Image (cartoon, rainbow, N blue to C red; front, side, top):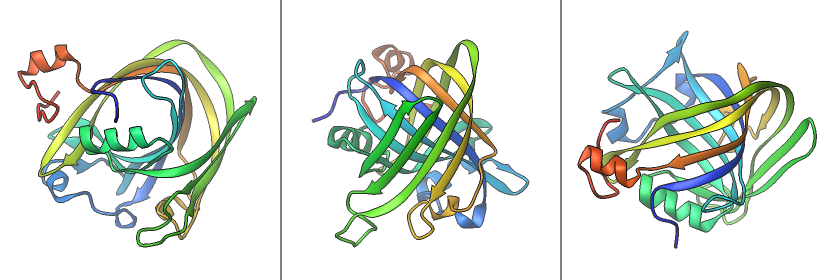
Length: 234
């Protein structure tokens, strides 16, 4: 089983932004292609990739690697997660069933014990589709730099295909910010091959964050959609 929506989560995130030629990326599911458009810079798509450690104090604690495309829906910014791995079955099943997030299982190394370096790596638990063996996904070495004073609000909407509809999920929270340098090493034969050999244009660490992922009862009352499959546009 998995926790009901919303999920209250705490932890650390190491985020990098890339500009990737559109032709290098897989197409979004049809229902999303009919609804959202990728945001491009100079003809390249903005892709965010992140390592996340969700820590005790939230409803679940686990590790995660994700890649997401920045899109817009009639001018409203959205985030669409295209590739994601976790090391928690509850997170995988909840992400898929509640929000249409295509989570897969992986094994992680995420070592943040030697300041200012964070060493991360992930290996797919099931390997490539159709393979019985695990396969490498990628790794990164993140060097943390300056800490920005204060804590900053976090807020965005995740848009995913859930069945034949678009599921729009609000995410809100707050966290500290640090600048960072990150060297990503995506496996050129793996599922993140579109990031192989690319340098991020920006890297940040979002530290000691808390997040509310999903609709709260107040959200559902405001939109008039009581179930978990609401399709409102926040």
